[in-house]
Structure formats: structure tokens, C-alpha cells
Image 1 (tube, rainbow, N blue to C red):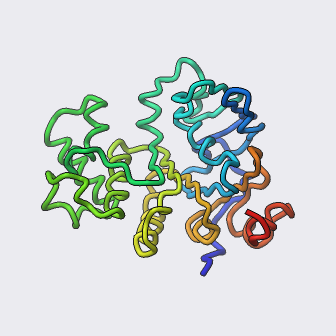
Image 2 (cartoon, rainbow, N blue to C red):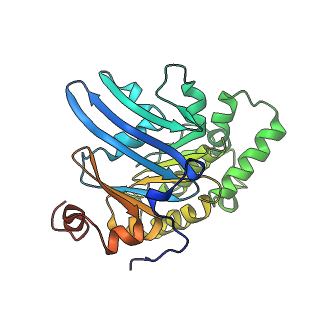
Length: 268
């Protein structure tokens, strides 16, 4: 059942810079000779959930990888245009990428806990940032696990291997690992595609509470999920942004026929 008609949602065209977490201006990206992202311009609103939808290979994951410069890890990656976070173009050579990735967290399709304890997983990023005092680490681990709705399940087994957790618990652990750094933006790339329906619902409910603390951008192929969890939705096709609006509007009254054809299952 689609949960539509969310209230107090401002049209994307009216978002000010102060209301924007990520601003993308004329962004183009190539992997070698392949032009993957084509003139993307959009504003991601603060403390909302924005869903990116579209066929496989349309550029959704590549776009969110631009928000924390993960595409830099691929040979032959070139880009033009701006991605502005906190008033700065993160594509600048002056950007401290390590700090950027602390500020912009990422959760991938499949849970990827590190081969260490639950506790060490959560505080891994903090230690990389130079946090060493045990009390500070303890407080951060507890806070992050509570935010990820995992504390009650693991508080008595913090020093057991993370791999002993179930798949759904591992995904929440990875979310806690990102939250421990208090990110401004949390990127979720198909975070529930490998999970069972009950755990998927749990993660979706978690997103609703987490957006009070940070901006969330989720890539999903699931139209029902996008409609349930997101405040705004952007539809991509072959590297281009076709339509971007509040989710109520996009799923009930899309402006473009191509968008309507996709969300009604005529292709994709």
C-alpha cells in the first residue's frame, strides 16, 4: 500500500540554499569514453528523504557516489560541474576527501561489516578520525546503536564478532557505523534489496526517524518503497534527470509521460 500525501513538503523549485543539503549544478561524469551522468542539476533538501529511481544503469548509484567522491576510486573517471555541500564545491582539488566521507556516510546494497567485533565496527571511523578516549568511544557506540535501533539487541554482546549477527542486524550495524560520525548526509544504495520483508520494513521505519538528524538519499528500484519512505523522488533515464518533484506529485501526477510509463510498469 502506497503511503502518499505527506504534508509540509515544499516544491523543489522553491528550495533555498539554506534548505538544501546537496546542490548539484550541471554535473557531467565520464568513465573513460562513456558519458554516464549528463548535465544533472538538482537540490537535495535538508532533513528529508530523497529517493532516486530508474532502470539499472541509469546513473543513480554513480550520482550518489559523487556526493562523497567514491567515483574517484575508479580509473578513468572524469567529471565537470559542481556538487556543493556546506557552501563548498566538493569537486575542488582542495577538498579533504577523508573529512567529506565522514560528513557524507554511505550504506551499500549488501551489509559489509568489518571482520571485528560489533563495538569495533561502530567506532572504526571515529578511531580513524583520532578519537581515542574510551569513554567517548563508549558513548558514541551506544548512541549510534540506539539511533540504528540495534542497541537493545546487542548491548550484552558488543565484543562478539559482527559476522554473528543476522543480515538485517548487520545492515543496521553498518548504518550505526556511519551514524557514529554524525554525518550531515546519509547515502543508502539499495539498502534493503538483500533483506527479508520484515527487516525491510524495519529499515524503512528507521529512515523516518533518522531524517530528523541528517539528510537521507536512497537509491531504490522498488517503486512502492520509494513512495512509502521518500519526501522527494527523482527519476533518471540513461544518465539524465527526467523529472524531480515531491513524491506525492511524482507518483500521482507526473509531468512527463516517460516518468508515468516507468512508475506504472510499462517499461523497466
